[in-house]
Image (cartoon, rainbow over all chains, first blue to last red; front, top):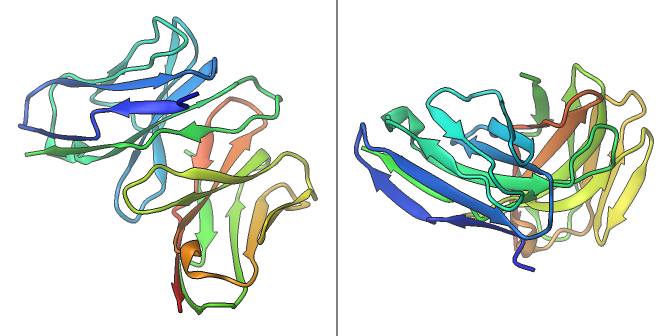
Length: 115
Length: 111
């Protein structure tokens, strides 16, 4: 059981380039989410998914796209990277369900720098 | 988005001392989580709380779900150098699946 995995661990992009951050979990969790973490700030939710085929926006969705074609995978796409997207990105998963006791498990993070 | 106020922002303590930190919200939460994050790593779940008044321990760590459901507390007893890191609280509202995070408490333990 690998938990939540993320690739790549580090990435440097030029402004305007596109890329996809990968996230996978092997715990059969329905709920997956992407956060960004900036210095001195807590984690802020970008997008989340409550199951395959269903996604929704979080607090800071602009500049990011997501899709959820399988339960296991939840990639995050940057279509045209900007320096403001320099951050550490974390993927998380949980069993999901309103009112159901639940906890979130995080991946190791992707450190992205946009020049 | 929801604002979670976490305090203190940072702490410098001597090894062996006890630590207390808290998290408050203007909204009522149905779940409180406490995480620890070490440099270069993702947050690791320490304690999960699901009911108002609940008191849960994990080794030297004890966390409580506040009676008002708008706050939570984390205590670390007899701190050791490996307790160093940033501690985050996270809460979930009664409606929705989103977790909202505090800004973190940075803990430094001086041997």
